[in-house]
Image (cartoon, helix red, strand yellow):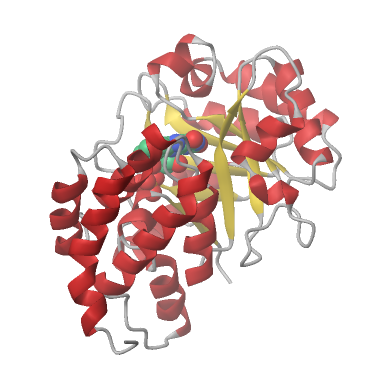
Length: 329
Ligand SMILES: Cc1cc2nc3c(=O)[nH]c(=O)nc-3n(C[C@H](O)[C@H](O)[C@H](O)COP(=O)(O)O)c2cc1C
């Protein structure tokens, strides 16, 4: 069965959201927000903060729904990425993923993320050192873009990852300079897929079931990774799997999604400092409004609210009438 991975998204796709989205079904694996590596082996608590699934005594490095979670590292120093990869593996990480795609200025300034794509030898060095140090039982995977200033080096980057021994390569089908501007160049991922002897996963701009089928046919990849598409339409993976199985599936209503949003908000309350509490809620709503008009109304109402009491009241006002009408009452 073709696999669907939930993309890592710093500041949005956290433990509560992974829990909730994987519970809806259709998602086969997840990746954490990136752990930034400089020149030390980070303590367990840093890994556990971004990947609380590592603390699970039942099924380590899996969401409560049982979906494996890879720990993502970001850094440009091979030795330290490798050591932290080994630490993540010792803590039970389902896989160690290395980020070569992050376009953020602050990250690139500190020599991590997409800026390494400018020198494929450095991509090789980081992956090779990590693959050599992490036990073979733990996959070492990489996530790249097609290039930095332009898309021309994508084959060199892919060959570097393959020769370094990466167990899988996820390709966000754009250069760093492309940012998030459509289109995603799924055909370039297809060239990579034909050129290397390593599983390749296509990523970028899969918003609908139709996009999913097009991305797979243009890239020739069996597996995909989806980020914003799953945030805007939380049961997209479920819809895709139903389409693959030829089954009928009724997509989630806005009411059902709004209840999930509230659950996510409540679960997140104890996990983040109060002053940041509304931020992740607003981020998720900003994605949901692409798909659900109701999310736009909700987003407009909460976007300027700062206090827990005000956000709680907003939920009550907006969801109260829906919940009063719901058959569960
Ligand atoms: C807000 C945001 C945060 C992201 N954080 C990460 C990250 O921590 N690690 C990573 O490899 N990619 C990160 N990405 C990139 C996504 O994983 C993905 O490659 C990109 O959004 C394209 O896929 P999509 O069109 O399915 O969203 C981030 C993207 C966004 C929009």
